[in-house]
Image (tube, rainbow, N blue to C red; front, side, top):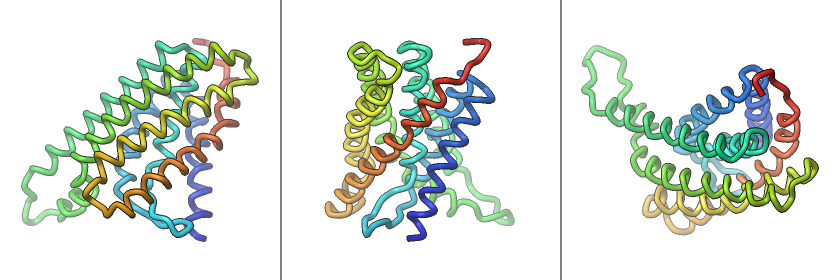
Length: 227
């Protein structure tokens, strides 16, 4: 029960910080959020937790806000800006992975703080996780942007934003989950655990997507002089 309550608070904090970031920094804040989210989500995903008797990884909430961000950019600034944000996030994910892999190769100073083991715990799985993240990120994010744009044509009114947001995200996150879990975790866990992680990951992402609907409606109403 602790993880459930703490997880609900965790989701609210993520959404609140997202809104604050956008309110304070405008469109540039959305790009900054994506950069932070891709890095933090891939650190968090190393940690597995139990909830409702299932095994799941952290990182889903933070990663889910990336879809929220690109959908908001698409809604307010157009498909071109959303695609730019996807490439922006890809660069920061690649950059952080490359740098941290190089950091792990350095030899520790014998008299210094023994940080190597801790860094390896966090970033030791990074190559597989990063490969899965890079592939899943590019495919699912561009799919999300394209689906959102098409749904925007079919369901164009302001009140139909929830259809555009949840419709595009629901499909693209399923693709993301299958690609990421296959590359990152196949062979690392038994198939029973793998399926638990894949199913719970997608269900949790979808729940977060639905929960983010009021957030995107709220954020859409923010006005900025540069808009």
